[in-house]
Image (cartoon, rainbow, N blue to C red; front, side):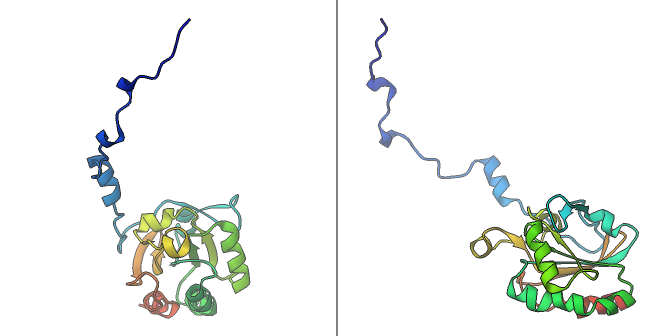
Length: 196
């Protein structure tokens, strides 16, 4: 019969183990990686977003293919600045933006599609501004506009920005300096850019 005995030769005292306090070279490169910020002339990322429900996929490059339009991002649906100022500005200025050449106006937020759908409905965006969910922040990462505010929002979000897009190319890009302000990304700024 085989007997099992604990042997002290297999167990090292806790004091002899040394915790590794420095990240390895491989892990350092992961932590130091930052997406390069998009710039004028770049193509918009080939990402899939969602409209109204997780089953309704929208390929962003299909939306702007052969069209001139506006893409703007917000830190979150139903947040004060986004709901009281940013989105309503684009809804209220929709006819002016359209007259200035915008064929499509798209708003994105790092939220799930149910939340962004309800937000668009509550704001009266239907027929004016398409509200697309970026639930995993893929567009925000691709544009280099990730807002690292997980302590506030529960996860990283998107900086507040706006862009004029023409046939999937960025013609103008306005990113709020602190990521959340309400100045350069507003509809009146984009309207002037469309007219220029």
